[in-house]
Each structure stands twice: as structure tokens, then as C-alpha cells.
Length: 578
Ligand SMILES: Nc1ncnc2c1ncn2[C@@H]1O[C@H](COP(=O)(O)OP(=O)(O)OP(=O)(O)O)[C@@H](O)[C@H]1O
Ligand SMILES: [Mg+2]
Image (cartoon, rainbow, N blue to C red; front, side, top):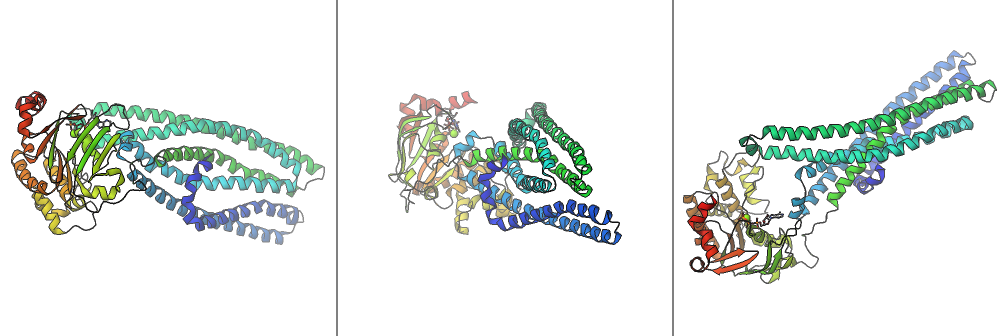
């Protein structure tokens, strides 16, 4: 049941235990108030009413009003404190999920749709919160009400109490069947919501492509189809709940009938007072609400259970690329980058992308990486900052396996810019600095100048201009230059640049190249190159083919000796591709 699944998330309530205690006390208090009302009624009937004593009747009525007022106040208190505790829990849980997602390796995201993560972070955590703030209250309320009411009933007339208990047995069976059925439905519904979130997200990010290709009707159809599946699944859930609901509503009426008959007989034979019978009936009525709520609580608890299972799937994925216990920070790096017998395949596939690859980039040397598309250049670049780990062999920085260096230290020694320059919804300044503690204005200016990103000074608010999804829209070339400035900021001894100039015009390219050649002089550079002109930056060129280094030498040498290289970099080849 939901409570068990929640076990893992209950510690989140620990800091708010005082709220929970107040909530529980208020709940017990309100229950005691509610349970005392039938008792008072019994006294009124058997006392003042039977003895025609109006003065006492008014006094008892006043007492009833007082109890009702108290119950109201306690319910208010209970709601408030359970709300406070559950909202705090929700926030903490969400923060932890986000932190956990960030700690996971890149390959985790290769296997997960973003919508599935979004729906877990928003909807599933919300479901857990709702169960804690409502379901849990009701759950406790139902159990305590049953226990208290049954004890009070037994006190009045144990035989009648037994009859009521017997009438409950079918409810337990129906609930059990319902839970099994509803669990499957709830899980499906939550997964479907994740899929739908993905579709909406892809529509938002791919809106240009969708419009340019006139794919709106296709996307609409796909979306509507998903909507239909969600509706059908929800309907199954509603039907299951309705079935349970009607079953558990029928039974209290049945027990009422039995109580009326047997209780009436007891009154006739003098074993029970009329006041006692009325009180007993009031208790049976007191059980009606918990029965009603039972269906909701059971469905909520199943939803909570599946939601926490879905959350567990994320929480249980351990970060595979993390600091090893013996990992040390690297104090000062000379920047000797070595790939030794490297074999690599993506965690989600069996194909070797790189195999038996050996490559050394000496300090202050710049190696240009050339290879056909899909030959694994980007994958090789990923291995240096440990965005992925090698499957065989090792990547070494200054002769130390990168897995023996703390990630923080490793990544502070390597600057990178990738093919697709991602900017965040934040200011240009934040996008460049990316949270690095101290970056002087001088450094910032130098990096911007180096990347020929001077256009930022002309933006409406200069460095404070917001860019990214909700901000000022930059051109592809501008974004690439910002990404380049980000890479060289902080003067890391190793630079890994994946085709950093693919979107800039020929003029800008030559200006950046000039600036870059100055930067690259002092550092170790691994440069993925597509255009022959960028090769001027490289001291040495390496040709990647079939997962290994096929040839290495200067551009001129390779042009002379290697046919594949010639084909890749000759004009004809570029035209053939176009
Ligand atoms: N995340 C991933 N999961 C599984 N396979 C991948 C992943 N990324 C890339 N691949 C595969 O790895 C191979 C090498 O891809 P990679 O991006 O390294 O090539 P590349 O040399 O950079 O190509 P390009 O010149 O087009 O940029 C391709 O066959 C690609 O399908
Ligand atoms: Mg690539």
C-alpha cells in the first residue's frame, strides 16, 4: 500500500516533525470531539427528553454547540499543519531530485525522455505531496475512526458491534481487488503523462522545424492520439473507483438495516435504551464518511505508490561517472593528454565507436582531428572531460588516469566548446562565467576578444542582456562565439574544441583563427576540424577512421600520402556532400 512505498520519502518529513505532531494531536482531538457527540445525544434522549426537563436540554444543547465549535477549530488546525509539512517535504524532495539528476552521467539522459523526467519532477512529486497532505490524514482518520467507533459500539452492545464488523468483511475483499486493478492503471496513466509531456516539450523546442515542414497536422494527430489513450486509461480508473464506491456505499446501509432490526429487538426486550440505540445508529452513520473516503484513499495510495516507484527509478540510478574514493585533485597541469588503447561504446549500444585508439597530444601542441561524419570525433572529445568513460584502455592527463582525478579538478583544467553551442536562459555574463567563483573583468574581456564575441557590447543591455530560450535571440555564429569565449575563459591548460567555427562566416573565421592561434600556442589543443581552413591552427593532423587513428602527420604530408584524407578535405568531397 501507499504507506509502504512512501517509507523512503518519510524521512523528508523529519525536519517538520513538530508540524506533524500538532497535526496528529489536532486530528485525534477532532475525532474525539466527533465521537463524543453521539454520547451526548444518548444522554439528552435518556435524560432530559425522557424526564421532560427543558432546562437541562438547553444546557446539553449548549455543550453540543461547544463540541462542534471545537471540532471545527481542530480540523482547521489539522489541515493547516499537514499542508505546511507536506509542502516543505515537496520542495525538499524536488531539490534532491534535481541535485540527483545533475550528479548523473550524461549517458543517463541518452536513455531518458526529458518528458518522463519532467513529469516525475512535477506530477509525481505532487502526487506524493497530495498523499501526505490528504491521503495520509484520511488514512489515519479512517483507521482511528474505525477503532474508536467499534470500541464505543462494543461498549454499548457488543453483539450489535459484531454485526457491524461482519458487514465490513466484503469491503476488505473489494478493496483488495480494487488495489490490484488500480495499481496497473495508475502506473500506465503516469507513464502516459510523461510521454505527453515529451511531445509538448518537443513541440516547443522544435517549433521551427515543425512549421517549416508543415508538420502541424501530424503533430496534432499524434498529440490527440495520446490524449485519447490518456482519456481511456483515466476512464478505466474512474470505473474502477466507481465500482468500489458503490460497493462500499451499499454495505453501511445493509449494516444500518441489521442494526435497526436487532437493536430494535434489544430495545423491545429491555436490553438497550432508546438513547443507546440512537447513539449506536449515530456511530454507524459516523462510519459512512470513512467508507466513502476509503475509495479515495486507496486510489490515492496506489497513485502515490506508483509515483514513488517512478521516482525511485531515478533516485536508484547511481552516478556512474563520479569521484572514486582515491581520486585526487590535480594541482597544476602541464596539459599532456593521452588516449591509451582506448575502446569506447555508448552505454546504450553494442557498437564499438572507438577501438584500440592511441593518441598523445603533447603540452602546447594542437592536434586537429579529421574523420568522416560519424567516425567518432565528438565521442573522442567527450572522453577527455569524462562526459563518458572509456570502455577499454584509459585517458590520461599528465600521465594520470582521468578517473583518478576529481571531476571538479579535471574539468577546471579542460575548457570545451561543443558542436551545438547551448546557451541557458540567463544573461550573457552568467552564460560565460557559468558560476565560476571569481572571474575578473580583465579575464572576461580577454575571453570575449579572443572569441571575437565583441558583438556582446552592442547588445541592448551589454553583458547583462538575457539570452537563451526566453531572451534575446542570437545567431548561430554569435552563439558559437559565446561558447568559445566560455571555453577559453579561465585559461585552462587543455582546450577541447569540437568544430568551434562551423557557423561563422569566412571573414570572422579568419579573425577568430588568428586569435585562437595565439591562445592555442600556450595550451594543449584537441580540435575537431571539418573545414580545411581551420587546419592552419593545428600543428599536427590526425585522421580518425574505423574507430582508430588511421594516419597522423602534417596537413601537407597527409594530403600527399592519404587518399581518404585527400577525399575528405578536397573541394570535390565537400561538393559531393552538399
Ligand atoms: N549518445 C549516443 N548514444 C549512442 N550512440 C551515439 C551517441 N552519440 C553518437 N552516437 C553514435 O556514435 C557514432 C559517432 O558519433 P560522433 O558524434 O562521435 O561522430 P562525429 O565524428 O563527431 O561526427 P560528425 O562529424 O558528424 O560530427 C555515430 O555512429 C553515432 O550514431
Ligand atoms: Mg561530431
